[in-house]
Image 1: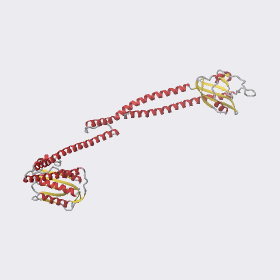
Image 2 (image 1 turned 90 degrees about the horizontal axis):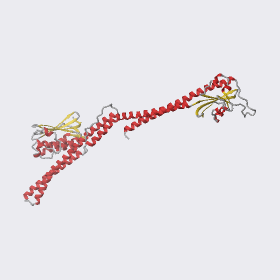
Image 3 (image 1 turned 135 degrees about the horizontal axis):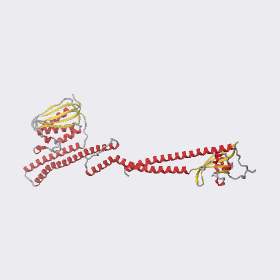
Length: 479
C-alpha cells in the first residue's frame, strides 16, 4: 500500500470518526431534547386534568363492602366531566381516567378496550403515590405514557394517564440519522478525493526523488538532481538533503573513478618498469646457458647485478609507497629540524662530492613530524635536485604564521608548465625519462609521507632558472 493511499485513508478515517462522534452526539441531544419536550407537555396537561378533578369535587365511584368488585361502568368524558375544558380535549394527547385500582373510569368513547397499557411496576409505583413514565405500544403505535396519581387527604382518588404518540418523533430522529449518515458518506468520499489529490501534490517531490534515484541506479549518473520548487518544509528539506547527498556521492564516485584510473595506470607502469630488468636478466641467463667466455661472463654478471639492484630499488619504492597509501601511522612528535637537515645534506653530498649544498637553518626550530619519514623526504628532494641541476643547492627554513617552511632550491633548467602539473603522478618522468635514471616514484613518495605527517608539499619552477620544492609543517617552537 502506497504512502499516498495510506495518508488518504488516514484522513478519511479521522474524518469518519469525527463525523460519527458528531452524529451520535447530535442524535442523542435531539432525542433527549424531543423526549424532554414531550414530557414537559404531558406534565403540563396532566396537571390541568388533576387540578380540574380536584376542583370539580367529584367523588370516585363506590365499591361494595369487600372492595373487590366493580359496581360502575366506564363512562365517556361528556358524562364523566361537567367542565367545558374536558369537552375540548384533543386526541393528539390520549387521556384516560382510572380509579385507585387501575380500572378505567373515563375515556373519549367510554369503552373498556380504550384503556392504556400500565405495567405491574408502574401500578406498584402509583400505589406508592409516585408518578410513572413508560414507553409502550397502543393501537399499533409506540406511545410515551405518563401516569400520575390524584391524591387528596393522603388517599388516591384517581389515576390520570396521558399519552402521546412517539411516531413523529421517531420519524424525525430516523430522518436525522439518515441525513447525517448520507451526508457523512458524501463528505467522507469528497474528503478522500481531496486528500488523495493533496497527498499527491505533497508527495510529488518524494516521487521525484524515487525517480531520480532509479535513473541514477540505471545510468550511474550522479549529476542528476531533484528539481524541487516549493516551501522549505519537511519535504523541501528532504529534497535538499537528497541533492546534497547526491553531490557528496558524485564527489566520492569521481574520486573512486580517479583512484581506479590511477590504479590501472599504476599497474601498467609497474608492469612496464619490471619488464625491462626482468627481460635483461632473462636474456643474460640465456647467454650464461651458452657458456660464454670469461670476459663475457664478467660483463653478464655485472649487468645482472645492476638490474637486480634496480629491481630491489623499485620494489622498495613500491613498498614504501604502498605503506603511505595504506595510511601507515607516522609519529607526530616534536622534532628538531637542524640535525635531520644536516644529516640529509651530508648523505646527499656523498652522492656527488663536487656539488655544494648550502644550509640556512634556524636554531631550535621544532616541528611536529616523524624523523625517519622527514629524512626520507629530504633525501628524495636532494637526489632529484642533484639529478636535474648542475649548480649549488640551497636548503632554507622559514617561519610563517603557525607553520615552518623547508625549501630545497636548485638552479637547473627548471620544469616546463605542462610537466609540473603531473610532477606528483606516479611513474611520470617527463621528457628526460630516457636519459635520467629513476622510476618516477620519488616525488609521489615524498608527497605521501609529507601528507602522512599532516604537512603540505608544493613545487615552483621557472624554466632556465631552477625549481623550488617547499614543505609546510606545524611547528612547536621556533626562536
